[in-house]
Length: 117
Ligand code: HEM
View 1: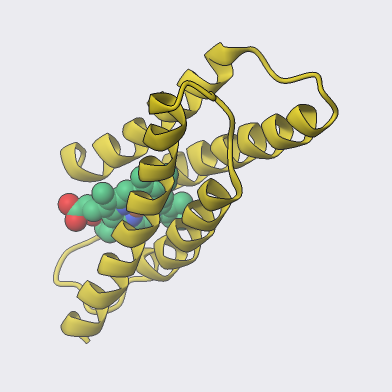
View 2 (view 1 turned 60 degrees about the horizontal axis):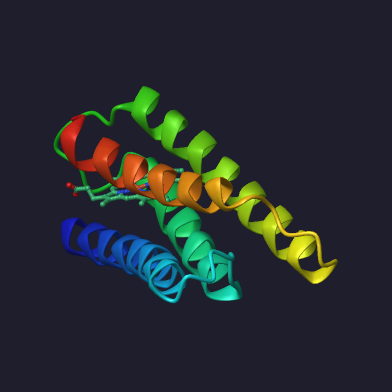
């Protein structure tokens, strides 16, 4: 059970890597737009995160306040990504600060995960 939980955690981290990695690529290319790859990373992080939120293969209690905050933050990131892509298609892109906000929120979730036990 514990090994399976670690495998799901690895999948969760792959989702984070895809999400943050694709965000960094867009920032470095100075396009400042959300992409479909970010949606994929979000979806993987969400599904694996939900699986990890059930108390299996654990020898300690989960911090459900932290998990709930992470879920709310993920929904906000998803909303920003969705609105950003649809507005870009219509030719009225969101202001660039919303792209930076997405990066801050992604790192906030990773920070919450590793710093707040
Ligand atoms: C952008 C979104 C997210 C990022 C960047 C992220 C990042 C991380 C990271 C880096 C870890 C590893 C922590 C460690 O083992 O030290 C982790 C663990 C975990 N994440 Fe996420 N996560 C995200 C979304 C979510 C969501 C939406 C949920 C729940 C619905 C969730 C639930 C969990 C749980 C239960 C763990 C393992 C237990 C713990 O260490 O608290 N995560 N996450």
